Image: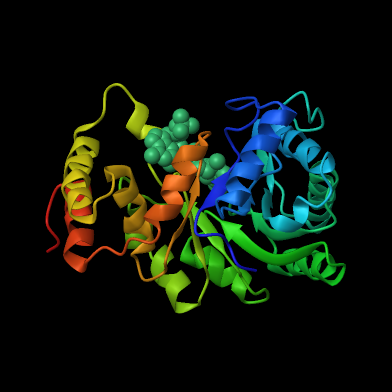
Length: 291
Ligand SMILES: NC(=O)c1ccc[n+]([C@@H]2O[C@H](COP(=O)([O-])OP(=O)(O)OC[C@H]3O[C@@H](n4cnc5c(N)ncnc54)[C@H](OP(=O)(O)O)[C@@H]3O)[C@@H](O)[C@H]2O)c1
């Protein structure tokens, strides 16, 4: 599977944000696909378990549209909501039964016969690799998922699962404002084992639109503005180019609800920062030079 250079994140498209109508879903899906942003990121839980279904209505209305895109979804978090009255507390479930049941629901909601990439949403202290392997084997053999990966997994969690299953992606939080994954071994591990890296909150998850921006955000944006002038682009694009310029070629999962920002982001991924430019951003985020 080829991911598009930017992945459209749908977390804020439904009840947890813009509450798009079916027509609005159709419009933004078409605009994304026309712009070459063909990969869409979902999770079973988005919109309290409603966003996949809302998005899926747009796919059902137009047979043929599904073939032009790749769909990612996630499972494993059990949220307390009236839509899942059986959940008494927020918990994780990575049992074979839950993974298969959740995936079957995603297929139904999204009106598709397969998911391109299924992710386990969070590392579960009760996860049993052999049980997950059984679920993944069954789903892959049935053609219901093409690829399998994880989200928010540290190297030790990836090591545990990799003992029995091939990991084909890790989606974790990383941006010019949040660089922990560079230091906790996540990006190193992914590079070593050829696991594609997908970044959630790649532009800070709403930090840029906050009225009172913390000092480090102002520092990073100040530096991004300077680098942007040299590349004849915007500071926001430099934040995204910073991800793509890492050796793992981190792919942003962008959460905007605005098509012009998605199109701009795709253009940003063609920008390669120099090593010095990349370190200027890192220095601004950390507030100090590398040792
Ligand atoms: N795996 C996980 O655990 C996990 C966790 C969280 C999110 N995710 C995924 O990651 C996606 C993105 O997460 P996110 O929404 O937190 O992160 P984000 O893309 O970093 O932030 C999006 C927010 O930034 C605003 N924004 C300001 N300037 C922007 C620009 N130039 N380009 C894009 N957005 C800009 C957007 O406002 P406008 O809408 O007004 O443009 C929106 O409020 C989600 O949709 C979801 O698919 C995964």
